[in-house]
Image (cartoon, rainbow, N blue to C red; front, top):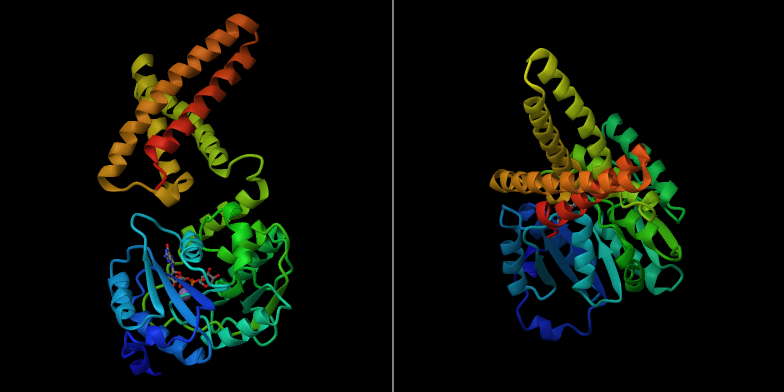
Length: 379
Ligand code: GDD
Ligand code: MN
């Protein structure tokens, strides 16, 4: 590794760079401080004949990744830092990295050295030859591999890959790869339709492309992570499910609304169960029991929505309490609207179930719309 070349690039080397940047490498980071310098050395060694830059899109890591990147950027003009505050998400990080650069070719890779940077020149070669639009670093074509994953993770990844092929418009062996390079236009025509949910930016890109891009897959072996920790937890699987659902039915029903409704339905079950316990086991009077059941159901709805529906904007600590108070208020008004609309519908139609459904629909749409704005504010 040529660390010196990285660290001692004089400011004048900005002027000595022969031309405009051809390749921007977008690297999402979350607590990857230790990996930045080794990665930079590897990139420098891998791309001696290319005008490249690297943009680290950091979600306000606690370990000082962004400061470290800026420090390197002061000495090496190929390095840039895009720091986001109060935001999370690998996919949106990559999307914003793309929007922050102007190069005709864009690569996306991880910071943790698991992706083989030696593939980059070959990927770029394939793109500049004009025969393809997108090159995927693939673990699942001949010559590629996943290193020594546990059999559990191999099976999980295989299942997730098969699911992905359903929503993917292109025939790719490894649509979940986090390592790829493409012509800039491929992103540009898809960006506005991308869901940005979760980890799977390539899949999102492919599923959101108006025309299937011409793809080549190049094999590589997924390396072992040496420093820092993986961010893949069970909730990444959940977010993956949300991405699939969004791509499958998002056109007809917003996935968040469907989830919100589902949790609302569950809330009804919670309400009735609490009411039953309060009346029969605790022998509380009906009015008080109904009030308790309402609060329990609203609280459980809040917790579940915070955990699942709005996972990407999850509230914690004091904000959680504040959010809960707002949620009570919104649902209270929603309940009044529900009863009002239902009563009106009943006096005009006299069909009890139609009136009931009308009230419930108005109430839930209100609750959903208001809490998306006031409880879980989009960041
Ligand atoms: N900005 C930002 N925000 N970066 C993130 C976030 C986030 O919320 N979460 C993770 N990252 C960064 C990590 O710092 C790392 O550089 C990269 O995204 C991948 O995270 P890992 O935690 O190392 O994921 P992995 O190794 O389990 O999975 C990766 O490889 C798979 C196979 O290629 C990901 O790229 C997967 O999408 C991919 O399927
Ligand atoms: Mn990794």
